[in-house]
Length: 332
Image 1 (cartoon, helix red, strand yellow):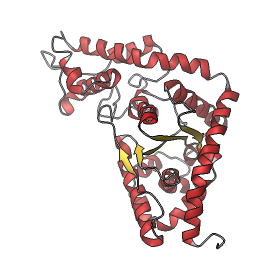
Image 2 (tube, one colour; image 1 turned 90 degrees about the vertical axis):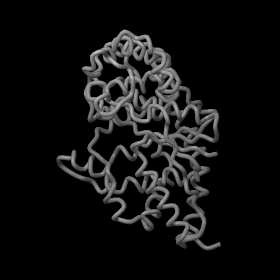
Image 3 (cartoon, helix red, strand yellow; image 1 turned 135 degrees about the horizontal axis):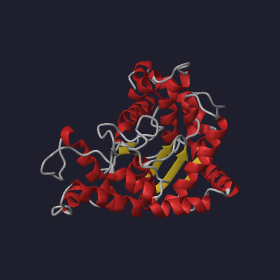
């Protein structure tokens, strides 16, 4: 099993990122060959500050390592260090339908938020995302539930390429977390937790201290049931459902087990206290380790350089095969 996933170095990483993605990266090191990429090229498709992008990249890398990614047990690198990604994306564009790109939900959402320029890169970045994965002939791609459309497009591109040029690319499978697939905003629990579209009070950041985490969770929106009922439900129970999902994911249990553990609870205060305690226990070691790592940018660059060398060795072989079957390489 070869696992690939990428994470953007934009925004402050929050609890949803950690539960829905980063934890699964770490677990992937024991399930197969893990390849993890900080996708800085994707971050250039919208307006950004170059110095901030570089700082956020180091932030993201330090969080990944602090969370348990081991550069000696996986391939961990910066996307822009491996030129095979953009070249393969260009070649794959020849088998990507304009109509498929035009239907991508995230393009519609992000383009609608742009005031000055909707870049061509924002429209075509799903092709680069496909190249990120297909370059490594990955078999599995751990992603959040909101990335299903991208995975399906990626699979379509690989299948269309193979049908036209011969079996060359591996068609990957998306893997989705069964617990914590969509961590919602604590203040607006019908919306996904986000650093850009969420509320500051409803977003728990990986680097928040224990006091801040506890304060945010204890102020989380629940519902007006009287007496309070700690159980999952429909939209009317969105806040309670979200807290149960968070509690289960932080403890490493099922939601049913989290719900059962609160059978004797006096109310939503007990649910919030339990969730806060579990999240603090989950994130405190990460924050402490991050603080040890983040100041040494030379060491972080060394991790990226080593990872890029490993990544190029894998991606260059795939690109050579793609160029050959497409007829754009020197014959023989």
